[in-house]
Every structure is written in structure tokens, then in C-alpha cells.
Length: 212
Ligand code: 1PW
Image (cartoon, rainbow, N blue to C red):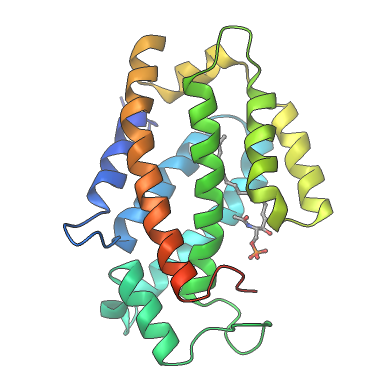
């Protein structure tokens, strides 16, 4: 199996590594988790490429901060928020001189993570006749859709219709038979949910949930 083959297990491992004992989230592993999810989206076919392109460019922005001269401030989401706010590096109410701050970029991934969590939870508890396109759009409407303009919602809806069926999905997740995938999802989801909640609380506390 080549190194870039998607495995659900790898997502679990990266999100597990992303939390330290002080419940801080390492940016490095957070984006590594997303990198895995991009591999996953790409293996679902070309319809997802416009979605994965946006995620890839956001991963890249964060990677550039992390490897740049202020990289030490970008080690955890907590240190990033503190550093960018203290140094006025965030456009808080409208886009201005910092259109691609770490805070607003990560917020986009954070919102998408909620979608993923809701979708995977549906997949975990789905039955044989459940439709992936329906599960995906329900999860989307409950989360990310509220933050997307009409045109993007339309395009995302079209991509969902082209999703492979449930059996193919389970195969692409690449974690054994259905029962094993369901078990691994049961293990992964609380971790993803915890990372999501910690980020959500941090952003809420700092009034950053609506960054332009
Ligand atoms: C099958 C499971 C896949 C889960 C992956 C979830 C990724 C969802 C990303 C949707 C992206 C749609 C196209 C891009 C939209 C951007 O405008 C938007 N980006 C996101 C990640 O929501 C907002 O970014 P922007 O325009 O404010 O820089």
C-alpha cells in the first residue's frame, strides 16, 4: 500500500496527536489531519476537486505561517490566536489589511470539521439503504451551509449528488469490513468532536466566530 493511500486510521492518529495534555491543539497535526481528509476527498472523484482545492490552499496558508519567521507563535491554535490578536494581525469586522490571517483561515477549516463530524456520525449509524448524498447534504445544511453564499451551496449540492454509494464509501475509508469501519468511526468521532469543541470554545471566548 503506498504512503498516500487514504486510511481512516491515519486520520484518527493525527487528530489524537493534535491534542496535548493541556488541551491545546497543535496546528501541525490539525493540518495533517486535514491533509488526510483531502486525500480522502480526492479518492472520491473529480467532483470534489473544487472543494479540496480550497482546503488545500487553506492548509498552505497555515503551513506558511508555521514555517515562517513567526512560526513559533503558530505551534498551537491557542498561541496563534493570542499572537495574532495581540499584534493586530486579524481583520475583525471587515476584510482589510489581513485578509488571510491564521485565525480566519483556521476558522474555515474549523467550520468544515463540524460538517465532517456530523456526516461521519450519520455514516456510522446509517443502514444499508441510507444514501450518502442525503447524509452529506443534511450534515452540510446543519453546519457549513449557513456560512456559504448561494452559489457555493449550489455547487456543493451538485458535488454531493455525484457521491459514490455507501458501500464504496466504506471501502474508500479503507479500514476493513463495515463493522470495523463503524468501530473505528466510533473511536475517531469523539476525538474529532473534542478538537472541534476546544477550538469552538477558544474562538467564542475571543469573539472570533464571525471573522470575515
Ligand atoms: C466527504 C467528506 C468531505 C469533507 C470535507 C469538507 C470540506 C468542506 C469544504 C467546502 C468548500 C467549498 C468551496 C469553497 C468555499 C470557500 O468559499 C469557503 N471555504 C470553506 C472551507 O468553507 C470559505 O472560504 P473563504 O472564501 O472565506 O476563504
